[in-house]
Image 1 (cartoon, helix red, strand yellow):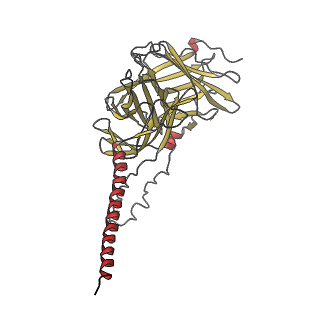
Image 2 (cartoon, rainbow, N blue to C red; image 1 turned 180 degrees about the vertical axis):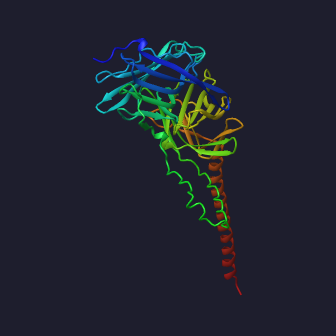
Image 3 (cartoon, rainbow, N blue to C red; image 1 turned 180 degrees about the horizontal axis):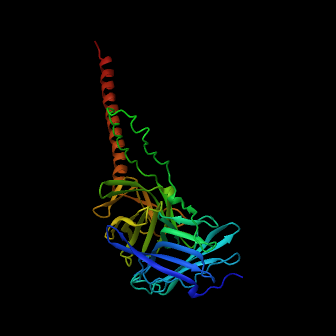
Length: 430
């Protein structure tokens, strides 16, 4: 039988808040430390981490909005247990107005591993969900993608990483966890997450032996000119409602961020995950590239009560996250757009590059765009309405062909006239 558990057998305390500074405002999140004790008052499970959630929900008017849910300063950890060979360990946290999060951790021979996470958020919390259509608690189960960790080893991840499921984006950073702690002492041995592992060999610092071998008259190497950023690869993205595809998008995306210096970022479709929600009058596509870039596109229907309806791009939001601590480097939103409009039941296409101005510091460039946010049938794009830039190109091609044919007809006619004149001259009497 495993050690007895009680509310007094575990200890949790909140650390100093971390203030995350973004372009459009401040986000506040708290680090939580949970130290679970067994019956002998020895540590059997230790966890220290920071996290927050991006949640997409339906508002009273049928629109879909994305809100941020952070840990609060009054978080508790009731129900957390140590676990043993036959029982899973559990880290459980309760915070805010009826929100909770937990993770089951199972033991298997010489390793332990997270099994699944459970998030319950309460849309009755009007501060976070001010106009939610659905009221009450909503529970989401998320499979933990992390691999097994050796016993008597602590799992550490300082850099941020993202786990997505349904309409939830979970962001974690500064994570330290050890389940099934042995002898009541957290181990000194660490297993690092992939985000913390170096991607290149470290630079060898100069030593006293080689620092003086370089001649003092050697000229510095010529600076390497910056490599131009190529156009981004085109990605294919889709959303489903049940078993039916409800949103189709093909697009290459590039961000232009102007802060201390201009920065061009190509969104890599191979590492980008699509999420979002489909509705009758609004639809949202969220793209997460490499756990550091979040882009959201919101479409709406114009004149929903009219007999002839069109859809358009209404809002774009962009968030750049710091790999080191998960903080917001840049956050921009433009909810007053009127782009990419087409008749409902059609798709919108624009092969030419387009620029969406999000704010004075952030632009989104699109390439080879083909999108349909409503009324997708048989998992295929409907007939496309092309942008003006593409239409001009298609219009100029037949004009150029027509002009060329006109010149050819004129040349044939002139040649014919000249030939007739020469023929008449050859048959005149002497």
